[in-house]
Image (cartoon, rainbow, N blue to C red; front, side, top):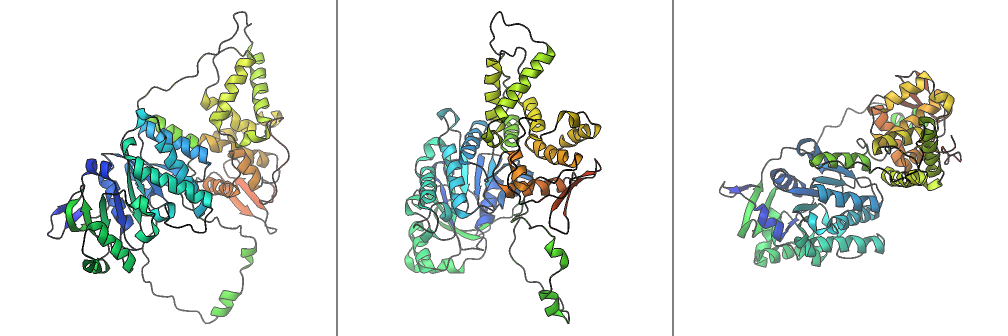
Amino acid sequence: MGTLAGGEPARLDIEELLATRLLVQGNSGSGKSHLLRRLLEQSAQWVQQCIIDPEGDFVTLADKFGHVVVDGERTEAELAGIANRIRQHRVSCVLTLEGLEIDQQMRAAAAFLNGMFDADREFWYPVLVVVDEAQMFAPAVAGEVSDDARKSSLGAMTNLMCRGRKRGLAGVIATQRLAKLAKNVAAEASNFLMGRTFLDIDMARAADLLGMDRRQAEMFRDLKRGSFVALGPALSRRPLPVTIGAVETSARSSSPKLMPLPDAPVDVEDLIFTPDPEEFNRPLAPRRAAAAPRPTTDILAELSKATPAATATPAEPRVAANAPELSAEEREERLSAVLGEILSDPEAGYRTDSVLYQEFLVRARMRRITGTPMSLNDFRRRLAVVRSGVDAETAESEVWQQALSLSAQVTDDLQGVLLLIARHAILNQPCPSDADIARAYGTHSTRRARRFLSYFEEQGLAVVHTDFSGKRLVAFPDLAIQTAPGDPNAPLSGAGVAAE
């Protein structure tokens, strides 16, 4: 972990930690996140890790250590399913909750932790579960969040720290203040790393946990950044000062540094209070600049590569012995009819591809469609084309074939979004609204729709701009086409894509 006062290495026993859990305390700026990063980097090759990351600081572990980044902006059912598969395939992950409101963060963390906790017994492999800013998810008193969210989050954290050991879950929780952390959660830790703190109540609790005299509690005020007092069976049998070592990765955020102010221009008031004309036409910036979305299907693909287990193929559907063989045209007609039936449901656009695929297989058997069933990848590809709403005449055009090739450069779940916008550009129709783009992806979040457009721009696939009236246009340089101006805030279009 670093060095002791005499320069000797400070070691932490991972196997002992898995059985005894760890609590880290320190005021903001004391080096808690640096400590957690050091622990994660040093143990990455030895144990599976899952990090609950409220600020998105630990996503940089993915580049060097291969952690799967899970975006918390999902339904609770999706998060629980992902967490369960994370345990099955023993893949390290980072659940990033950046950009969510505190109430949503608590619900997402609770769903994910419960999904890990409820895994089948055969998948109870050891996992290091790191929760940064634990006082948010296990508050000592009720705050401004809803009572429902607080109870579910507190229950999940209690399960992690109190009952998680038998299920292989080793909790590592970090908090700014012990007084804000629920006592039944903090009390289950047997290892402690106490950093700089100033409030009397926090110093007293830290001294009590370390078995120190209360008169010695004043030492916590004098600790330097990155220095902690360690105690516990995985660390030391008596309190020892530890200086945390260097890390290989860095957080996306950093501590503020002093910078000289620029020379103020003479007409500073005119500069500040006179708006730029372009500001009126500039689209609202998203709350955070996120990387490429991490959809469920993308995570499933990574998980499938994580183990050498063979990929299961859909079983041959059972058909009657006297079922006639279908011609290629008849089979294609029936497949299209089944796909149309599924997408005729208004809620179909908000279901995951895997759920729709299972319904597709069942309906295909009921229609007596013989032959090898369509694979999941082929189904996703075809679903993307149907969701784009392309008509038969446009589908035969050369520019549409080029659009299909362009869509292959993005993940399967985003192909439908790209093709929808491309279809509007080919037909010179108004750019789809955020609501229509969100529906093409299968979400109600218009903020996520705007992130998709930013992602397409980052990949060099499209150029997004606005006209003087504030309407949005999307151009595709590779296809030499552009949509007509469209209102990004327009309501959801009433026209579905199933009939088309």
